[in-house]
Image (cartoon, rainbow, N blue to C red):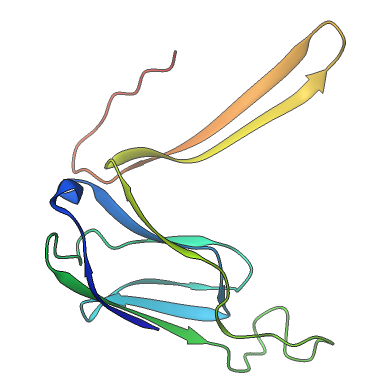
Amino acid sequence: MVSQDRQHPQASRGKTVLLRFEAVNMKSEVYVNRHRVGGHVGGYLGFDVDITRAVHVGQPDTILVRADNSVDIDLIPSHKSDFVLYGGIVRDVWLVTTNPIRIALMHIATPAVSATAAETSVELAIDNTTSGRAMLEWR
């Protein structure tokens, strides 16, 4: 897939710009303006590629995604399965603009719940794409 003449508004200056793929079968490489910016192996999990350093804010960009569905005996599921493994970008792709310090992943669980009490646990993964340290406050 090649997507051309996509401009990022000036409002994205100073932000982190991601391509969020819901699925690409089976191996992928992502290029922006001829620079390899990332990739992924495995077709059933979503993944993000940070394209911040490769985009030209306010100017047209070229995005190329190489999807490889060739036989690879080291990948599961193998091509010996009883169903067809389709290749390519098989789910949605999102252009996401975020702050350079963000919650990348949040998992909330309730391991114990009764009629009178509940226990909740929260796990966070924080991405900081700045060059400095950041102070986070939990309320």
